[in-house]
Each structure stands twice: as structure tokens, then as C-alpha cells.
Length: 90
Image (cartoon, rainbow, N blue to C red):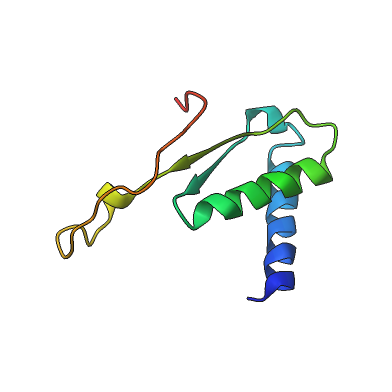
């Protein structure tokens, strides 16, 4: 995907999230996987906030899944980044 394709896909995802949550973004939390997914999560939050300017700030966080990979026994894996989830997800 080129830059424009990614931008278009993020906007589509943002519209779908808004639609499925009936515009109530106050209960939405966006979690990005460290390390590559964290910037994508930030871009998705930016798209959500741009599309729905009246929405409250959207909670966001990151999670490092290094210890939960299915190839953990095949090579040494150490967590590289911090998991930071700002709200209780239960």
C-alpha cells in the first residue's frame, strides 16, 4: 500500500468505527501493538477525531505482545516497549 492507500483505509476504518458505535466515541479505546501498530493506532485516533470534531478525546494505548508470540520458543524474545493501557478494559 502506498501513502494514499493507507490514508484511505484509515479513514474507512474510522467511519466504520463511528457508525458501529452510533457516534458515541467516548467508550472507544484504540490499542496499538508495539512497535509498528502504535503509529497506526495514533493515525486512526487522529482520523476519528478529525471526522467527529465534537467527540470527546479518545483513549489510546499500546501493548507489547512479545511474550505472547507463537514463535517465542524459536528465537529469544524480549519485550522492547512498554505496555500502556490508560483505562480499565474490563
